[in-house]
Image (cartoon, rainbow, N blue to C red; front, side, top):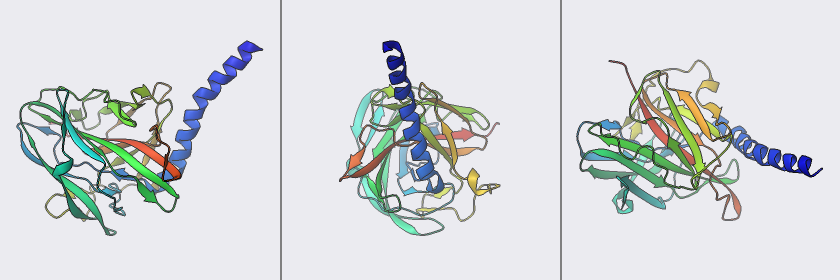
Length: 276
């Protein structure tokens, strides 16, 4: 009897994260939200100043732009050194094909070779349709000079996708792999939404392009939904050159905000490059 009870307890522990992740996917897949941390090229031959755009929107459909409060944190990590960038953030208005919304940007200077890991922790956004808050801890990694350094580091975030593939060195048609984690621990069976940056951001006009790169064959293709395995690991083939976003839903340790449910998500942006 003791053995059966122990086995039942272990089974419940395995199934619970799957049920939570699945419920998040069903709740959000119809209206996928993605925090952008966008700069056009994630692989650069040399340093210099880059501009990062941070609208909270729907990049695959050029959809609704959600106005959010100033991020709680924004910083850069290079060769293990963390640099606070919160004071570099400036207000902008971001335009989609549907509307405009309040967003943010930052100008950052890259000095020296290596990986520059940018992380933004937005303020929680209240989603009235679901009566919950959403907070997407988002990571974008820019490499300078083809010298890999920090790209696969685990930073112990409350919600984080740790890449197993260099996010800036993937051929079109190649596979991106990552591990969904919370405070350094894998999240079994996490639900992961995937969207293609189908409307290229216009950096000067703070808006999405008017025409898409491709036309999905059906609405269900706009947001792809996958699940990590029992070890929190997932794989996805990047069939089109450009940037792709991965959002692991509801995996953060913080579950409530202002007395309401909080979906603390992990987001990472990666880039696929055409074959020469």
